[in-house]
Image (cartoon, rainbow, N blue to C red):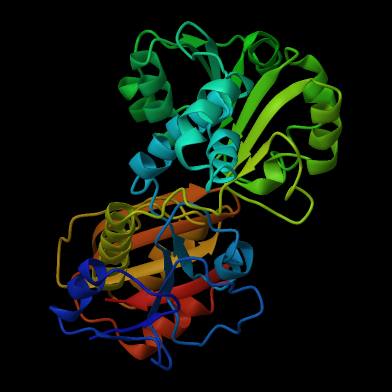
Length: 387
């Protein structure tokens, strides 16, 4: 069967899916066919020749060298939506934390321990220092309407907020799940200018790094409250601190603390708890395991970040999969090569994603080593598997 290496602690509910089908699983596995991980940093790790796929039990893949994997034909999977509810709940908590001075109030209460019978009197005297406002009727701007953003938007509507969303790449599935009460922002500038609260739910890529900077902050309302449960690099910390001092930003809640933000007034730093629930870890582990099994056993790609999603029901017991560069005449060369080897194609699916493409081919006979080597020799082919 297949060898699976774990690089972090993975929920047993996910690992059992491998074990019951005879996979060998463990942190000490050598020459793995697949790797399952959470936050382990793979950027300085060498890839064994046996490695076919990496499954991240979570949404973010910044800890994985995705491009380098694509160049070797190694699939990288993530688990979008598996931890969505956990992050949604923490985002709603952040809305309340930044609105009611709850954190500061709790800290103050601890300072009056030892006052005995005077504690209630001190509480009544000082509680006005921590008065806040209510979120009902306020406007929330949701940037990014993926699985988490949609859930946050819908929950905020249920809490009585006016919600507007911005996502130029919203999927059909996400759109179907979005409440009709969520307004579509004409553009990012209009969302920033009209929102009392702004919450970020976008991936950290080159295009989104430091997307919240001085230019964007200047577009916002005075006293805006910003929530970041996605990735720390989305916000320029230096620009943010200046905006806090100037009164432009009333509160910033982040799940990604760093040295620059710790101890800063009006910054509430949460220690990366977004997906840290038992349910979320189980959901992510199960999804990661199922996706990795489907790829190793049938060559199907579900939720890959570097290759196109590609699923084909089997038409025979003999299947070939190829990862290759997305260049002209690749399918023609592959089919011609198989025809020259008297191998008949029963069914085929080819899809592309950016620079890369993937092909699944069901054939009528066992494919010998000579035919495999000829497929590998085609210029642009990065990986060939026979399943």
